[in-house]
Amino acid sequence: MTADEFRAALARLAAGVVLVTAHDPEDGPRGEDVGMTATSFLSVSLDPPLVMVSVRNGSRMDDLLERQPLWGVSVLAESQRHIAGRFAMKGRISDRLLFEDIPYERGKETDAPLVRGALAVLECRTEQRVPAGDHTLVIGRVLRTDTPATESGPLTYFRGRYRQLG
Image 1 (tube, one colour):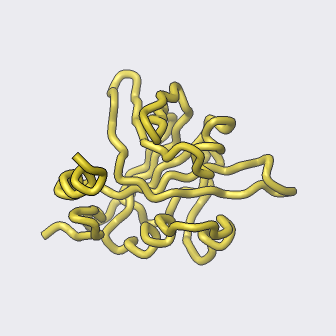
Image 2: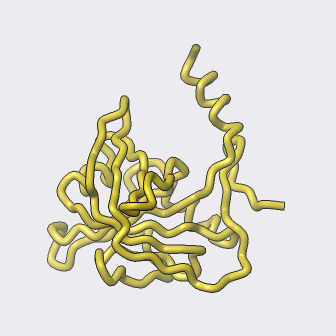
């Protein structure tokens, strides 16, 4: 099996889209916010409340989550496709530019940027990091959630494209 065959098979699995964020207090005078789009995000346990996200080894988010245990997750709505696309960009784009014009508020428990208008937000503290091939599975204890009232549907990813349900 080739990597392309594996990727094509997994592209047939629809996934919700989230933005994982953290604040790096050590980067510059005021720190810097870091974010990444993820589709490999799931709940692990209800008691205690645990979630998991898969982070590419050597990425900016991986480096930050290795030393910063507090992070946030914004479950993106179908109207937030532009946010998912922006944070999924390849290459070295300044994280300051990525957050420009994105409406967010600071997490109460984590100081992580949480996207306004998201279907749900979670604030987490890393409990465990598990090496897994070219990624690390980051398991976090959920410290706080917020589920604003909204009629919007979720943003999903299927066959290499962002999609809406229905």
